[in-house]
Image (cartoon, rainbow, N blue to C red; front, top):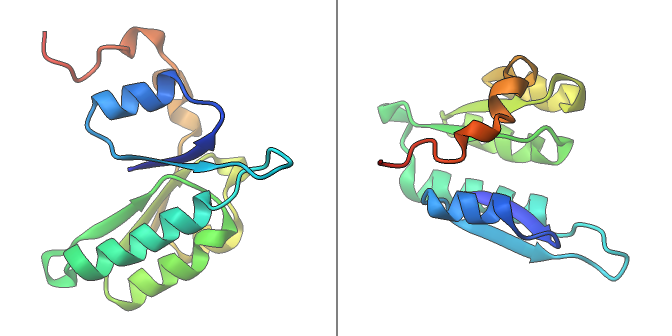
Length: 126
């Protein structure tokens, strides 16, 4: 799933949708600030963890975010026996989230790969 806010809408949303992601877009407030994105993602994480995930199968949540707002959700999933893997930029990941995560992977070493324009068709059948 991909969570975000409008505006903007465009290439990122369309690319994610074309690759099978469910895109959840929340409206911005009157000051054009992002609202409800973190809580929407948190609610879905916890809902999915209880409805679909099983510690016995070694199911894990993968969170690509670095905000401290996700600490309670990560803690709740870990208390349920699930692994929580956090991936985000080194400088932008809250230390409490990093500490709460089962594992943390910095995305910084992958910047050139993640921003390659020649990957536009990556994963699509020829």
